[in-house]
Length: 583
Image (cartoon, rainbow, N blue to C red; front, side):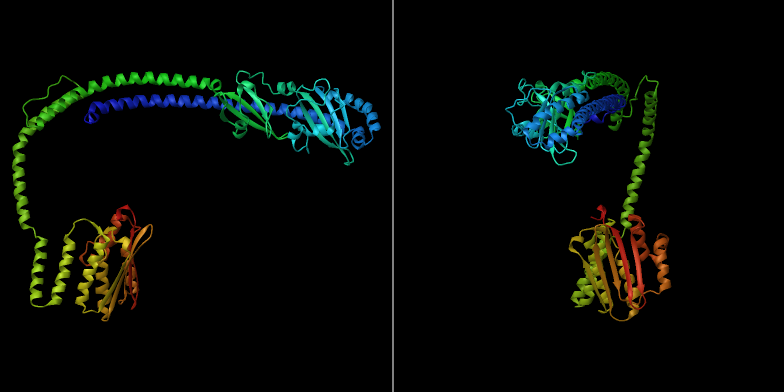
């Protein structure tokens, strides 16, 4: 422990702090700024990519929707939707082919168009339809069931086309629109198939391939555009996490994901980045900052050790010389060749030794005189215990003479005296202050021949609180002398002690003659503004002294307030703070 209090250690710590702390702060700020800038750039870049892909997907959706509307707005669609005749259905094929040829330029990349009216008749265009597959078969397929609500146009998940003769295993996406005829009497399903590559190529970010790990689209129950198989991103984890979250795949690789909803189809588009690759620049910046700080810290440590040793070495020598002086060796001087402040300190120390030698004898003489003066002062002191012992002797004599009232008064006075000399502390427990005022009231009760009664109400849990001593007795004394004595009839004093979570309150009430309003106003004004000055005068010690002591401890927000009504009595309220110092 001695080493930690040495000058060398303090100098070393000081030098290290003023060198290492700034280096660490600068390095930390540099890393923090670089990391934040990189993160902001990543967020901006990812959101920009997502916006572009949402726009591209929205354009695809709108193209398919326009193609669908081009079919719906033709009269042939109404005829097809209402048809219930097989022969008429065969005749409609040629007319519908002409219609689709005319609007094919709206979306030339489709793989086939299928119309199914509510009576189960099926029309196909752009592929060879498997006649063994009915409308009911299509409705029962998993991919169709997974779409759910088709009250507005939807795009299905990737699926195979069992209803195609030549390529039933080729996966496609389907745009499905439940469209009503112009009279809103019947409807048909429009199914527009397009290949997986169309959606994949649409959402591939060629310009940012170095940063972008890939794109995922998912619906309510599964992926719409599955991730690359090597990524192994579980669907539930991707769905549960919010945008700008880090998730871990089955191989333990961390990915940062950004999400944006596509409300037209209730899809979510997710852009994911491999964290290690994404934050490589940030990690490199962190490592460079860390290496620079560590090297700088070692340099500062060695420099601080050297400087601290050079400064503390002569001071340590002076310290050893001072210990020799403490042991009484005043003969040897402290010699140093330093021309700086250490040299001045050595010269001052040597001069001090000379002065000490000259002062030792005079100090010894002064100490002798001081001891003699203290002995004289002790001899002249009045011992309060002598007064208390004398009262005990008088009490014994009164009891022998059977003067029990005198004995009782002496006992009470002795107890008062014992309480007053028991401690010289400014604060006492509340129970001691209450005990003191009870003894005082008992003495006054004997003096007034039982024309005085009193009640003291104190909650048990308040009795151990610490308060300023002797604040109740001057108030009670004023109540007796100025209130009850002139009454010349039975007087009563009530003391209530209460507390809330902020204040401790004493209310001293008497049924005396009261105070005339002019005098009361004067007393209230003096309590507010002039109590400190009035305590200097003998005739104003009691009330104003208590006010001054309370306000000197706790401030002007606390103290005494007084209220009185002529011929009804006076009430004095003392307020103290219920703070740590009163507990």
